View 1 (cartoon, one colour):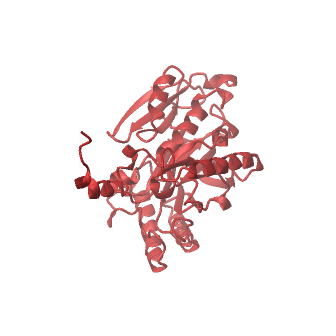
View 2 (cartoon, helix red, strand yellow; view 1 turned 90 degrees about the vertical axis):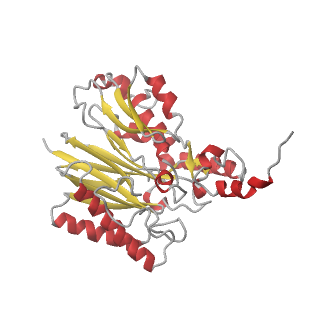
View 3 (cartoon, helix red, strand yellow; view 1 turned 180 degrees about the horizontal axis):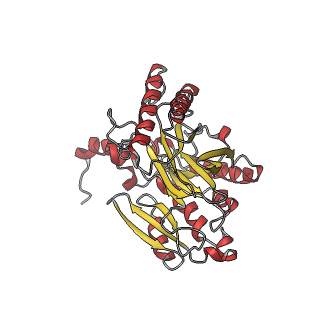
Length: 371
C-alpha cells in the first residue's frame, strides 16, 4: 500500500483591499512555484486555494512530515508572493513571515501547518478545512463532534469498527505541553480542556482499537500556531487549517461536515479582538468584509489516489448550508450591536497582545485608590 504525506501550509502574505482577499497575482505565483516542484518530482501533486486573505498551499509527497525540503518550498513560495504583494502595495504584505531567513522548518516562523502521513486505503476521502479571521481553538468543537459525539456521527453507534473510540492529542498552547486522552472513557476530561479553546486545542486524532486502521496514523490534524505568541504582539489572525480523513472505519464525509451546520462562536474577527459565529461558505463566498468578517470556513473535498489530489470539491457550496449561513448572519447582527462591550469584544486576558496594554500603560499614572 502507498504511504503518502499531505501538507497544508498557509500564510497571509498580502491582501486587498485591507484583509479581504488574496490577489490573483499571488495565486499565480504559487501555482507556478508548485508546478515547477511537481515537474522536479519534489512533490507528487498540489492545489493552491484561498480563503479570505490567506494563501493556502496543499501538497502531496513522500518526504515525511516536517520535511525541510517541503517546508522550504512553501517558505520560498510565500516569500516570492510577498515580493509581488509589496510591489502591488497589498495590505499586510508578508505579515505572516516573521523572519527573513528560512531555518529548516516553517513552524514558529509565521505560516500555519497541518500535515499527516498515512497509508492510502482502497478509497481515501480527505477534507481540507481552511478558516479565516479566527484561532486554532475554533476547530475544537467540530473535531470533537466528528470523532466523539454520537448525536453528530451516527457511525459511532452503527459502525462496530468505531466502537473502540479515538485518541485525542490536546495541546496546551500557553505552557507548550500536550496530553493524550481517549474517548469514550475520558470524554469529560477532554471537554474540560477543549472548552477553554484559547488555551487547549486539539492537535491530532488517532483511531483506537479500530480493525480497519493503524493506531499510529492520524485521521485528523489541525494547525496550532499562535502568531501573537510568536511575535509578542498582535500581527494578524491565526486562521487555522485542518485535514480530516473520512469513511471506512471513520466518520462519513457527511458526518465530518455536519458540525459546521452549527455556526458556533469563535474568537478573532475584527483586529483579532471579537467573538463571532463561524460561517461555512463556498469558495466564492470566502471574502470577509463585514467588520472584516464574520469568521469563515471553507471545505475542500478530495479523493487521494497514489498521492494525486483528485479534487477539490467545494463541499459547503450546498443550499443545505443556507440556513446555517442565515443563522450566522443573525448572530453577527446580534453580536455587533454590543459594539466594544463583552461578550462581543474578547475578555481582558485574551486582549494581551492587542493595543489594549498600550492604552492601559498610558492611563496607569491616572489611576487612584478607591479608598
